[in-house]
Image 1: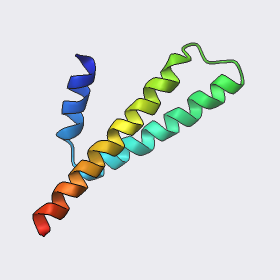
Image 2 (image 1 turned 30 degrees about the vertical axis):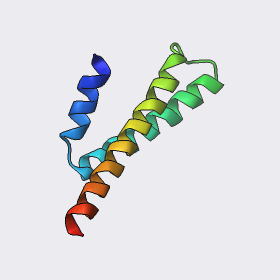
Image 3 (image 1 turned 120 degrees about the horizontal axis):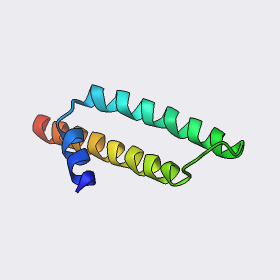
Length: 73
């Protein structure tokens, strides 16, 4: 259920807001990988969660871009 609400939140955002979220998620992933390499990471499952969130954000951005292209054509 949590994933569905997260996806609904993403769909309600603009493309620019999604791009900002994408950058912050990539920064978080970098920091998590760095913590994992130095054995400071408490929750290693968080890495896969962030990777999936990045994929979700990219998917929503692609869907919005395709809708814009179809609307123009």
